[in-house]
Length: 436
Image (cartoon, rainbow, N blue to C red; front, side, top):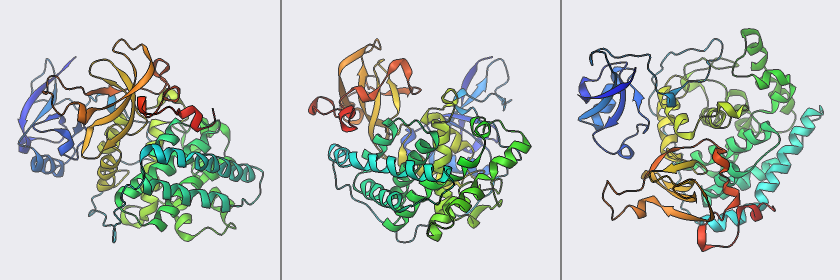
């Protein structure tokens, strides 16, 4: 059975309806471009505050007044729910950042990429040493990792794109290693967007890097199948948080970093672990770390076959706002990274394929793309950079070049590392940057 669209007044929306289009550009609203389901009267009020009318999906061959709540678009497929998970919705006032810092962009993308080469290597080695010592049953020395975390924070405050690009292009043999680094970079990019002061960014980065340490004590089978555990297996899996705290208790960590490790798996409605905290009882940095860790697990899970595209992941986060994560944090995170964050493989409306290299929160749907194939999906000898916002400035809506959609990592051998990340304007390559 197919799905058709019906135009309805925004104030006439009902719980269960799926909003698939708006009367204005998506980037002018906080809603995800992939659409979203109306879950409450508050959602109706939110939509009505932006739009006069919207389009909703309606199953064909049925009355338009009967909405099929079972027809969930593929981009909203859910991850298996954790045993004992809850769908309770919890409303809280928006989070207020005390004295937010506005970080000017003080380094160009290319310059910061070069400056971050040694930082990537230093962070890689420092985290590897920590994990190796924990696996050996020893107390790790965290000084090198703490220094790397501070340098990461400094890099992101200068330019939020460079380190994110490097982390998304890097390949790791150890999943815990990759997950920790990428989560830390997401956290720093988001923390910068929120205006967290530098000291909090340092704590956030180190906490994200160390949050998974306790998993080294878990059986490999639990980690390999962590999305489909039995109740008994899930009980053992949850112990990784306490195990991590025990492993790090004599390392001199600050209370701020410890709280991230301790509470990053708590959830907004109390369905998390280990203590089942909810709402404002969860420390802010732990809320951020938990959201970043979860997003990274959606787009880069241990089993790559289960990976969601960034667009699918933000649509899922938006759908579950005020359930697992606080609504305003989710909305601000989407604003911070865009629908197509840096490192996302995309196909353009004319068939060309490439990777997003930068974007603006004000133009979320028109990022800068490094194009790697022609319209027939044949690889180019030299990549080219297209700034979609600038490219479309003088074009009509019908002639505009747009992002058609996200592509899974590894699609048709698309490898950004083979190309010059700055296009024809520079001769250095990403592979050379990392010593390849």
